[in-house]
Length: 327
Image (cartoon, rainbow, N blue to C red; front, side, top):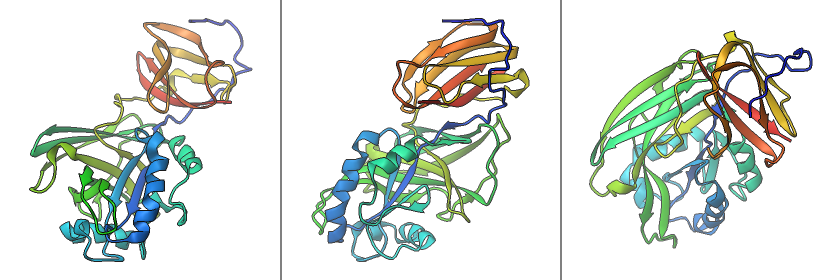
């Protein structure tokens, strides 16, 4: 419900927040279909991912170690070894989350997954694919707030979601297998747009013989090639990102944040159209629509679970996304 307050703003945190969007962690999983250790440790890794299927992006990479006979490695030696060499992987299995090596013993933990899936990013990646065996993909990279700097590269990889194959190590189901890079396997140079803008890139590619067309999809990520930090990743399965523009000129104020019960959203120099609060899975938990008003609006959060939420503020001048922490 809308509440308009005629009170001083001294009790509010008046700041021009740096808008951000949901971050999809990238898990690069180095494994090998001849590796018995991989077969013993991969099941626990995949089990940990069960409750995070729509929140993370996983890609399995099959390098030449410890066995060059791995059929997934042999199918594309150059691209699999390119990622191995980039991370200096010397044994399998290994998992790199957003460019950083995770625990060697457990590969990943639920605590780590909780941390990764609560993070936000200043870049959002939207992927649209059309066609079947011959495809075109449109990749839109939105900038929310301050664009990251550095030696940025964009990677686009064709991935096969599930492959049934009785491997020598005993594994029968193989997930998100790297088939081929559409970009260079070293990445293509990428320069993000300024706040509120987007960069659009089109790719065309073919689904090769031996790949299951219904299982194929494009996985895109942006990485600082020097620091190895991955800023975000995207596939066609992700929630939609709308065009965004900065609302800083409207003197946007959000407080208290973090909060235990509610958040006040104040816009002084613009008209709020819609307020939409969603969890990190994209589920809408509260919304106020067709407001067309200036003032202060209360977003109730008392009955919500603790965690991070995303507040979408749509005004007559644009859209801004803000991270809200419920304590």
